[in-house]
Length: 144
Image (cartoon, rainbow, N blue to C red; front, side, top):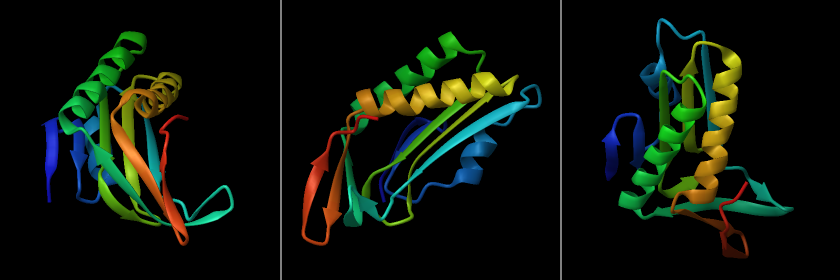
């Protein structure tokens, strides 16, 4: 089981992601807002039954890009802490592929920063998703 991280807040792993642990990483006594995005594997895409998803990443570059997202978010919003965790490997239906958690003094900034982080991650981070169907497979462009 390979785990890659630059520090606990930015993380890529083949192990299952833990929402409560990620939330605990961003908790802060002076922040009233924590927004969390959890992306899971769904059982269908465009009417086709999905069996599983396979994620591959260029870990070193992915971590750098995830750190860049966190830095850019901090420049735009009053973020105390931001965590970005992504899974790689084969994931079954219902498993968690990504967790992003953001703490800020007020909720609006947390919502906005969390949305920015997931949208930017899908556009810039070298993590690739393959959808495995009952009758074939396809690599998916990871754009929102």
